[in-house]
Image (cartoon, helix red, strand yellow):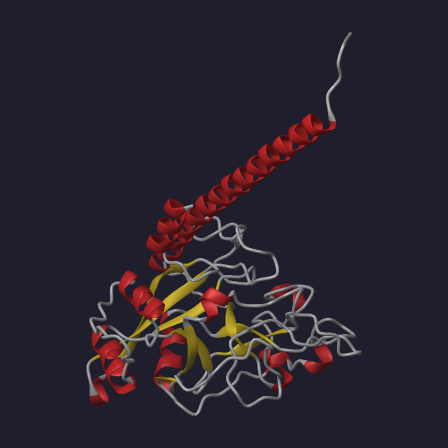
Length: 336
């Protein structure tokens, strides 16, 4: 007489299938992440080569993404510290308001619905790992002029904490023509960090304008300076903290501060066939709710001193959306 499976045997088989399936799905997820990070690493290398070639061939950078909130009405946020880091600013996970006087790293819109619905789950802005290594930096007049004359960076795309719920952007009526693109067209939400969740305007690069900078007061920030060729040699014993005055002097002596901008679709380097990039890539290994563009770093290098000093902005490298340099991104892949 043929005997069937017992209930215990069936349960054991089902349990084994569930375990094998879980392992297979976990392995598949890991393979996908490794593949996505390898693509991201290749994108970083390609962007770095393309920007270097573009600048060497006389290309002018313009309309990069600001990683700082815009102020009221889309105006840039101005810092009281010109030509200096603002180490004292702190950044709330809840995001900033366009009316706040505080300098804010872009964390995604806090409220953009008429009913005040909290919408950050759709666009959380800068990735938490990148946020940890950023701080505000107030440009002085010489630095702002150097960015415009030497790099051609005359406008950046700034992003407000609150989108216009009615138009999902700042309409032309709210946007002075003289502050639009060179051809007179008006940028809208599709030009910015997130086409659905952020209102965007172009702002002039000008004196006292706040930009995002790599924070040399953090260990990860100092690692990025070193990856970009600046040896910051300060070492700390347990329980010590970096001295702000010493860090500022060290950064100045080693080459100057690193400031950061996102490479979005509106950048002038995009869509160039001879030298440049056909399109702006995304870091696809992270969640879509984060700002997934690549970050361009520029060193504000001061040459000479006193009345004969001048600022030479230099392209310094590319970070992924988590703030990894090429070397760090490669290390992440080897650990997965």
